[in-house]
Image (cartoon, rainbow, N blue to C red; front, side, top):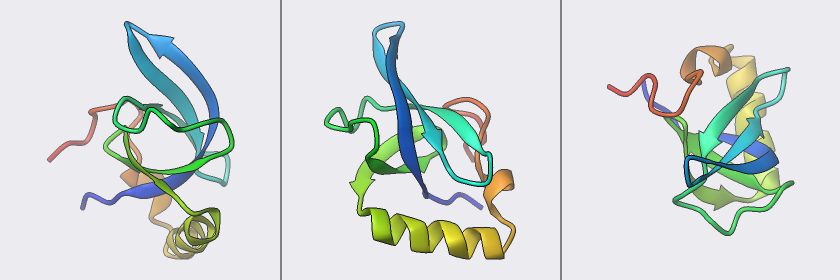
Length: 89
């Protein structure tokens, strides 16, 4: 199953000419994501991540509700790739 998972941008940097970041999904889960599609993101913003790519900026309250629901369903860790592009189906 492919889901867009909300997370908080905690670090922004450039790698190989692409804007990249570390995104915190809560519960100790932090993954690297490509931020090229949402260049306006800043540290502290919430974004929706799909297969390692930020695809939109999201409201913090809605992001927290979604993360709480996913944690309750124990779905978070299995949906997040270790690297951008991993887990595409």
